[in-house]
Image 1 (cartoon, one colour):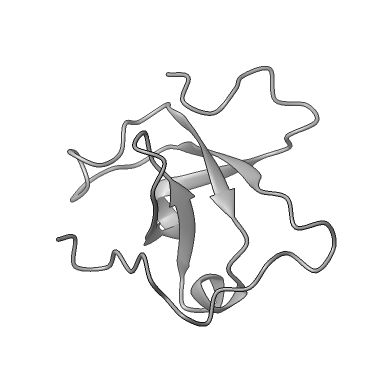
Image 2: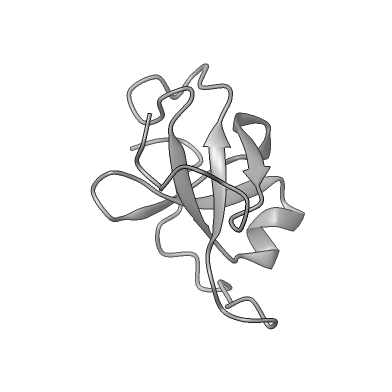
Length: 88
């Protein structure tokens, strides 16, 4: 198991604005080469507690969500992103 993957963090809450996921692009995967692909677009689920701790909750190819360091991703504007999650 990944040292900082916490799929069952009980403090997870939904985005108070709209409950929607955001879109992020992986820009760094050192230490997570098996789990993340640089350039791939992922859904990010709202998790204020994780974000305060320096992590983002990201949905991987299996449909499960895991915590990864913020430094691994660039937040994309979903309305302006011309890619869909899972695309390389």
